[in-house]
Length: 314
Image (cartoon, rainbow, N blue to C red):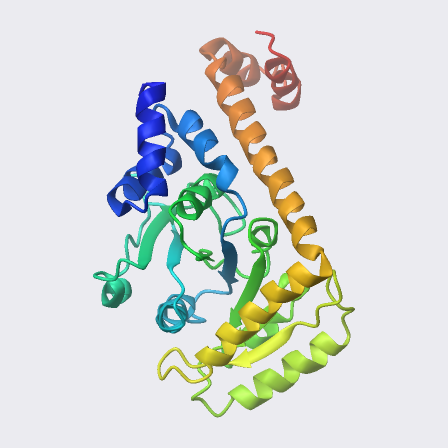
């Protein structure tokens, strides 16, 4: 267990922009190593220091390639960028299956870019249960933009709306992806819709369908009308416009007062994740063979035992 002094020193190094310290802090808080709660608490005061942007969409829509292009564009505009890419979990190591992706090597020597892969570790909704702690580390490190790329689970990938300021839904004009984007959950959380692979002829149809679908929806909180940006991660076409739409949404949040509402929603979600994980760990630590024997003999039910364990009784 690191001492309070160790935690303070590591946090101070991160706030000075030390990338090695940020990498170490991320490992501690996301892998929940000894001292992770104290370290996460030390960074909590930095909540809201960065513009957080979530990119979601079904597998194959090209999110990772688009993130790479977007990072290049943001860097050209003078932004510093932290990227948290949520990947499937390895059944053997518990780590991110894809690891730190090869396509981000173009930014590997850029001190203004930091990328880390996170494992879902079974959490639904395309995210990681320690995502807030990871975001706070990057906020403390001084990144002006923090991009969160979800794992790509489709229309149930709505948790990101309670984690970031701006949600970008990515789809592609083939294999029905435009219909995926139009399903209820994703349509309701998207602030900006990026139709990737704009170099394909089908993109105009996909954009038209999205426009028709969005016209049936009421404006988002604060009066924002979601924007649609045809983009190509292959050629870079439309990426500048996508970046402009993201910035326009951030400006709208600030001017409309909606930013405070979103930040409060994030705080509620962060607290709920901390509570649920702590309750789960505490309750499971009390599970013994006797409890399993009771279930096997049908002398109790998971519901009854669950209530007993959550109440702190044995």
